[in-house]
Structures are given as C-alpha cells and as structure tokens.
Image (cartoon, rainbow, N blue to C red):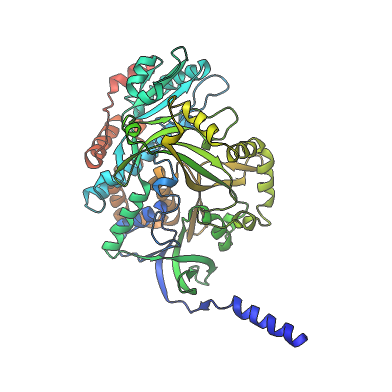
Length: 531
C-alpha cells in the first residue's frame, strides 16, 4: 500500500515537472513583456533614440495587439477631453475644473506628434489604417445637465487647445449634427450638445501592428509570439533573468536583460509582484469587463458620423459613461454603443478565473479590502450591469437613439480592464484609482504600467515618463535631446501656453495624419478669457 502511494506521488511530481528548463540563452538590452500598444510604442521610441539597443518582445497570444489594444476591446477614442465629461468635474463652488482636460489634451497631442514623425519617415502608415477624423460631441439631457454642459463649454473656451468647440441647446441645430440621436425625441425635452471637428477615431490594434511591423521589418526587434513571461530573478550585477515559457512546446528558457518593461495589460500586476521590487508593494487590482451593442444595419451606420459621449449617472464610476460611437475598424465603418460594464475575476480577456484571488498578498490585502469597502456603489453598479436584460440595454440605447430596434444590434464582449488599487499617500488608506500609473524600480532597471483609460491615447507621453525615469542619464545627452525633439517637437513645452507652437504642431499633424485642425488666434483666446 505504501509502495503504491509512493509511486503515485512520483508520477504526480514527474507530471508537474514535464516542463523542460534550459540555461540562459542570450543577453539583451531590453525585454518587453506583452505585445500591446504600450510595449511597441516604447520599443519604437527607444529604437529611434538608440538604434543599437537589442530588443525582444514576448507576447502570449498569436499576434500583437489582441488584448486591450484590439479595436473591439476599447472605445477607439483619441482621448483628448473634447467630449469626455468625466475629465471636467463641477466643483463644490459651481466652477468647472479644466485642469485634467488640458492635461489629457496635451498628452494626445504628444502621441500624434510621434505618429506623424513615424509616418513622415515611412515607418508606419498609411494613417487611415489607424486614425480617422471623427467629430467629438457631448450630449446631455435635463435642466441640470444642460446648465453643466454650458458652463463646461464656457470654461473650455478659455483654453486654446479647445478652439473650435460649438455649443447648442436647440434641438434643430443638434439634429443637423446627429440626426440619429434626435429623430423621434420628445420636442419638449431639454437637451444640449457640444461639437468639435478636430476629434479622431483610432484603431489601436492596427496601430500596434504597424509599430511592431516597423521594428520587425528593420530587424530592430525580435518578437516571440505564443511566449509567456512567468517569472523574474535579479542577477548579481543588477540585470534581470527573465523566465519565458513557450506555450506551444511547453519549454521554459531564460534570458538576461538590462531593462525590463512590463506592459501586459491586466497581467502586469501579478508579474510586477514577481519582481519583488519595493516599489511594487501595496498595489492591487480590481478587474472590470465590458460589452458593446454593435449595429448590424448598414443604413443606420451610414447616418451617424461622430463620437457622442453622455454623462454618467449619479454615483456611477467613470467607466460607465455611455457613448454612441462611429468607428473605423479594419477599413469598415461601424457603430457601437456602450460600454456596459460587468465583473470577471479574470485580469485579461484571455486570462483565468483565478487571476484576482491569486493577486492577493501580504502587502496589498489591506488596501484592497479598504478600497472594496469604500466602493460599495461601484460593486452595486457592477451587479446591476451584470444582470441587465436585452430590453434594459435597448432602453439605455434609446436615450441616445430613440428609434433603436433590437434586431439592428448585436451584443459583443469588449476588453478586460484592471483598475489600480493603491495606498493613498495622504490618508494611508487603500483607494481605487481610475487611470494609469507607472511603477519603476529605484535603479530604473524595471518599469511597469498599471491601469487603463485613457492609456492608449496617451501612450507616448506615458512612455516618455518611463524613459525619463529609466534612461535619465542617456536622455540628458545632446544626442538623445536632439532626437527626442525631432520625434516630439513640443517636448519640454506646454502647447496650452504657446499658441504659435500649438498651431504649428497641429497643422503638421493634420498634414501627416489626414486629420482636422482649427487654427488658434491669439485675439480670439484673449477675447474668450475676458468674457
């Protein structure tokens, strides 16, 4: 009997060890974990700054940009705060805070500059494969919301980067902008909208593929698909030993890297924890899934040409902001409404149900529990969203498209997001943070990106922060300074404070990317500020 048990244990042990291991195969300058928009953006930026850097990217799926970067897994909005009302909160004194809106707008301008640079060099493009001009609009219903939108509009008129925005509370005018939204609407209903033509729709999945292809064609980056990074170990010289599993052959190899960037979407948090760097302690994550209603009627799709963002219900999180979006996906015009949020313990769309419980550890258990207790309304909202019926989703759609019919729309699963949970520096309590956060080791040898929206839109400015922290010495050299200003002409300057430069940058972006721009006039801005 004992012998039988021993044999069984041997079989189990051997079975768990069928994964073959090998000694370190190579040493590289940079390892990118994850083949999404963040990793390939950083890879391209580093290659431009130093073409001699050896870079390898590991992606667990069979192609780059298939998780959060995929066109179906995000809103596709060139997030620049032109229409997103959550970036312009109304303060307790009744004024509109435009600080975040200006910051987001500046960040997207930085992204467009880098894309324009790469297009001008023939390294990515044509631009219409990943970016297309699409008006950005805000639309609200009810007296209080109309008053808020007008105050928001007047506040943004004082900001140069928002030149060209129009406001109307006249139903006929709004109908000329967005007929689908107004057809069949009660003529006595109080509504208002803002419209600005410089908005864009961006296919981040296509852009990711373009950026990866640029480096692969030039031989500047090695890409390993169906390879999953499983662990890290610090070498005695400060470099990193990266453990990589080939998902097809079930073998594991190691590679030594001087710098590691973890840009694996929802999988970033558990991987960051495996580095054991002190800076990673205390972080947790809360996963949120999503769904879109996708129009299947070409006649309806043809009638709408805008991204129309509404206002989230009182007490709802930023992710709940409804929007009716024109999209260009793989060259085809689409119309999406949503997102409808949901809950899944997976950290990736292609993840596992055990991702959330596996992320708990000694350092983050307290902030995660505190954040949970502090966000009961979010939990309630997610539960309500999970149990929505098709009729309830249709009712939500009809607030933006009164004549919508069930048969014209299909439900499609969107991407998976992991919101950041961290310890607030002021209160020392756990908080749920919406947005993105870069975590770097003190010596700059490893960096990771946590969080979600407006991530992809601000990918270049976020990766600039990584470079500034992890390649500080190199960035101070004349060679890197000259190159980075060639890539991003506004580097080190605020466009909101330099109208002449803003006009120059936007005109160049318009010519290179085929998008709309509106010239800013100093006299107009001065007049707006006086008013």
